[in-house]
Amino acid sequence: DAGVTQSPTHLIKTRGQHVTLRCSPISGHKSVSWYQQVLGQGPQFIFQYYEKEERGRGNFPDRFSARQFPNYSSELNVNALLLGDSALYLCASSLGSGQPQHFGDGTRLSIL
Amino acid sequence: GESVGLHLPTLSVQEGDNSIINCAYSNSASDYFIWYKQESGKGPQFIIDIRSNMDKRQGQRVTVLLNKTVKHLSLQIAATQPGDSAVYFCAEIGTNAGKSTFGDGTTLTVKP
Image (cartoon, rainbow over all chains, first blue to last red):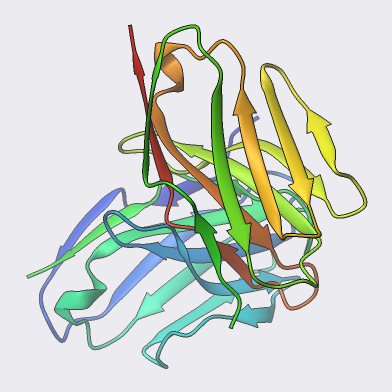
């Protein structure tokens, strides 16, 4: 079975632009979580979605938003990009809250 | 707020030796933890998990110990191999609100 897949793998944007990152969960997983990982640090929780509803939100500004589709795939949107948004964005899927989360390999976002 | 921290940012061991990676957490209500391994250019890989109703769990060459009294957990890797070289994270996985908290990781280097 395929694992969590994310696209694109790499992306370069400039300040002020917006970006959409995509995630397809493991088949059968209904929960998707998004994380931001800055070099040298652990992943920081951004959002969790379950059955298309937001179930958790981390300490990120409103420029960050996400949604989950009926097929349980998800998008993370970031508006008005800042240099500090440069990071690896990770998606993890699970059967639900409190269940093992499995990660994709992330999207490397670079802001110039 | 909640925090999860690792005791040592780096650990170097000889091939064949046992490795122990430690982690402390602050939220006494935390009840589900996962250890992840992250190799360069990849997303975190699930190693083993443990819930608060257990104090020990074993996998293939790995053991996780949970001490709720002092809010500490550890990952033990038996007969460490060069392929075990990676960054290891402990994570407290939210069971209700969906928020998950990661430490900053311990870089394990295995010397041949």
